[in-house]
Amino acid sequence: MMKKRLASIVLALALLVLPAVPVFAAEPETAEPAAAVQQAEAQATEEEHSFTYIALGDSITAGIGLTDTPYKQSDSGYDMTENYHGYSSSVYMAIVADALGLDRDHATDMGLPGVTSENMVSLLQTEAMPERNLYGVQYQVPGLRQQVKDADLITIHVGYNDTLVRVVKSIGKATNSKSVALLTPLMTGALRHPTFESLAAYNKGLQSMASLTCAEWKDLAQMINPGIQEICDSTYADTTANIEKTLQELRALNPDAQILILGYYSPLHVIPAWNNYFAKLNQYVKELAPQYNVTYVPIPYTAIAVDGHPTIGGHRYIARQILKAMQK
Image (cartoon, rainbow, N blue to C red; front, side, top):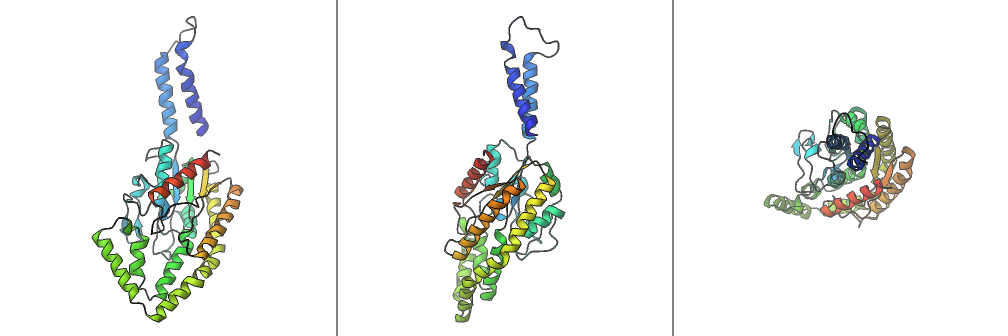
């Protein structure tokens, strides 16, 4: 498809110099040069617009935390269908699409909040998750496999929720669910754009945490250290296996697309276990990617908000890293 696009552009450039040929050159028997140029330009534009990009991932790819990310609560967790083509102009995939000259019909945001690496494999295989995951979400995406088959560019960013969801669940268990009222407004990005409702929810969460008993504080401390390390150790093998299965599924569906797999930043630098875990995961993905003709894109310096999702500047940085990787 890229060859056809380049050929059309070359044809258009060649036709542009037609008026400069010697006056004794034979006149075309059909269309005038200007009409031929217009036809070639139209064909080149059509070929350019046929180039498609699909971004696969979780809440980071979806743009959670940005003001203009459209989604709805649903019985299965989130309804992201409006976000597939109505995504925020600040999310990294929108910035990449704009740089490539792609409109919303040719650049699709398939970011699904709460998705784990295991869920991504299921979605690529069957276009559905068989059951709700630990985050409480369940997605069905009819037509996903065909979209992947048709794509010229695919970015994939998944794996964060494998540990994050388990950590959040464990914190909830250690605090007898008192942490839920605090973590919900934090993780959803509601505090980036404070409203009376979000501040009230945050205050309620603080009050709930203030009511922790000594035993609950002790359990919470135990959960953080060494609990997070134990979660990272127990999930690493499954996460890496699922990431490889994801690349296998993508390549089986689309042997020719340019595929880029994004690396990881640590969502909370003050927790050494997470820093070490994501550094290890980055190294694994970096070494795995070439085996499937996939490009690894490091994003270690992503600026993040209190909810752990990228800021607008963070999304711009990720987009720059993607575009830089595409040029290599």
